[in-house]
Image 1 (cartoon, rainbow, N blue to C red):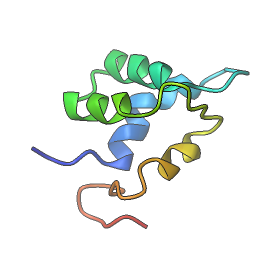
Image 2 (image 1 turned 30 degrees about the horizontal axis):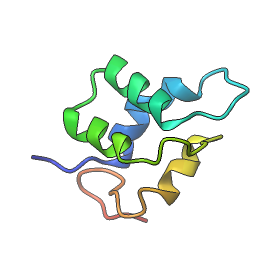
Image 3 (image 1 turned 90 degrees about the vertical axis):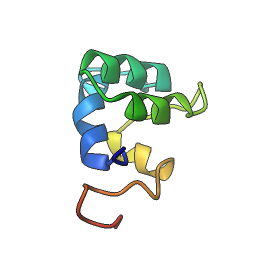
Length: 77
């Protein structure tokens, strides 16, 4: 199985950050990922986040996934 990458994560959850004045919560990310047809491995990564973590920007996710590779061919930066 391929590892989950930041590129894959961004593509799956981008809609969770559209037009919202309130912080995005992990449940919002899971909903967006499922709606986007994300792989189960990606959804499982999101489900491991603490339920009440607020994300104001997608960039905030990287604090919680520091070792997630950017894409399948490059190391994390």
